[in-house]
View (cartoon, helix red, strand yellow):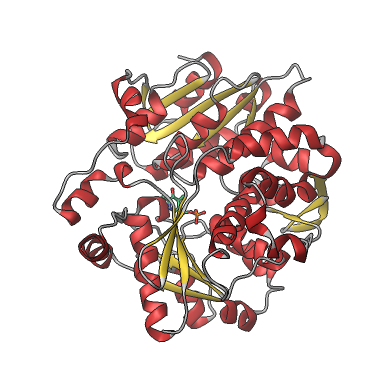
Amino acid sequence: MKYYNLKNHFEKIDFREATIKGQGQEKGLFFPGNIPQLDEEFIQNLPQYSNEEIAYRCMKDFTGDEIPSEILKEIVAETVRFEIPLVKINDQISLLELFHGPTLAFKDIGARFMSRCLAYFLKDQKKKVTVLVATSGDTGGAVAHGFYKVPQIDVVILYPKNRVSPVQEKQLTALGENISALEINGSFDDCQNLVKQAFSDEEINRHLFLTSANSINVARWLPQQIYYLIAIKQWLTHYHENPVICVPSGNFGNICAGLLAYFRGLPAHHFIAACNANKVVPDYFKTQNYQPQKAVATLSNAMDVGDPSNFVRILELFGHQFETVKNKISAYSIDDDQTMNTITEVYKKYGYILEPHSAVAFAAMEHYLKENPEQKGFILGTAHPVKFPDAVEKAIQNSIEIPESLNDLMKKEKKTVEINSDFEELKRFLLHKI
Ligand SMILES: *Cc1c(COP(=O)(O)O)cnc(C)c1O
């Protein structure tokens, strides 16, 4: 399989290079050269397959002969080695719990797959790679755990001081070993700017081989298709009609993976992009005019994105046909008040605890079902409520239990290096680790 750069179709590379590079010239995203179809027989019989087998069948065409099948089988088995249950909330809405991985967020799946591919590709090389990421909370933890103790790889994570939740902070800062956490006196945007500067700094690039682990990397994006198939496997044992699939969306990598799976043969009646107050895409659907905006802060902060990078991949999938996109996807914007009310109501009515991102999806799904009452479907539950305790406890007027798996982590010591939002300080750290 070859991947081409969406900004320059002449730049074509293989999976290995796309994984190592992350993005192409002019910051273009890579896109698969063809859309490999899934076997019809395989889709109809999904309930008979193990999650490992589903994951392997899903990924093998994308890695081709660049990863031997025995190794790929190990990688995907580790990628999906936790529960991914589809839970019924009411007669029309179910929720796919994607938060039983090590950092309690769906990003664990992409991060685990990518880290293992990168480790495989680098294993015979002498050079060390430094993975540099900025995080507003969830990405950092998933990347840290994905790359923890992976040989040849150092990870440096920048996060805004005092702006991530206690669980998120421990997930970033307590591992040690090859993971360094930099606590930045500044905002998430400052962290991102510092990372961008580092990538374009000559001196740093002379000394270090930097790569990013953000969601535009194909090795993080593509494995997200796997859990759509695992959802359908469970869906088919209960329902005959195709589901409506609603995805809480920020950078649009997650929903774009679902749409790719749909183009390969995944049964889906319709997709919903559930956004918070950051509504570039809902506005685009109304006006056909894509207008990037400055991100505004919301309760569902992992979706505070003003110019979603993966949206171009969706347009590419649909051949840039606005009407076709609009027929298959609806987009809704849900504000913080609606988010809080949804958490309260769902807890009262069904005893289920949503966190802010899943609540945005639940509210969007309810809007859609009001207009399409004969439909049914599921939303993607992208994080565990314990990662967002303030909003959740306020909404349900009750305390939430910390899952046992977190007890040890919460007892560990936080290890960080605090720096100002100053590129020279970051540079000193990267070059001398001080
Ligand atoms: C990252 C994240 C999202 C948004 O996913 P995208 O692929 O960026 O659209 C939604 N919910 C949670 C909890 C996240 O961490």
